[in-house]
Amino acid sequence: MSTKHAKAAEKFLQDGKMAAWYNETLWMVRVKRDKMSKEVPEWEELRNKACELKLYSNSHLEELLIEFEKNATANGAIVHWAKDADEYCAIVYDILNEHNVHHFIKSKSMLAEECG
Image 1: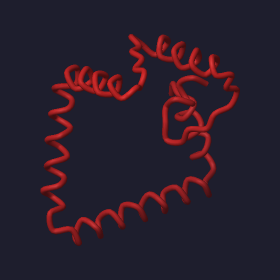
Image 2: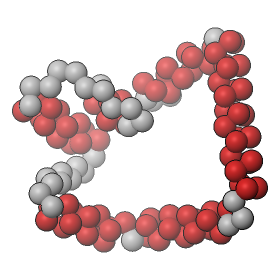
Image 3: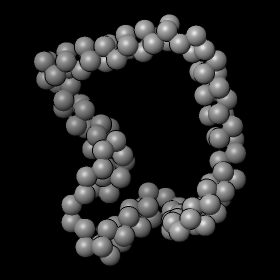
Image 4: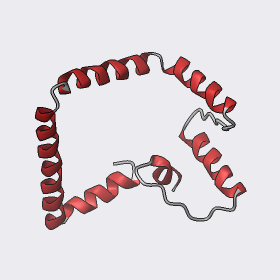
């Protein structure tokens, strides 16, 4: 396992009570999802549209990213490109360092994990 999250998850699941809680929670979410899928008549159509969108975006990623950069820049954003994880970390670290940031909280993001 290569990430902090994966290592923490492995440790978390070694605790039987926590593993059981996680399993129950996961199944609760799945039951809710299945219930909703039966209540939304166009569920399968939406799933198919999502699949088409994913296939399109993956096969046109370069042009979509270039378009995103163009639009973001036009709206005043600064877009950074990184060739690999090390360059990404260096860019993020430099931005945080420039703003004298010592702590940050970002949930559901690889930013904290990747940058330590």
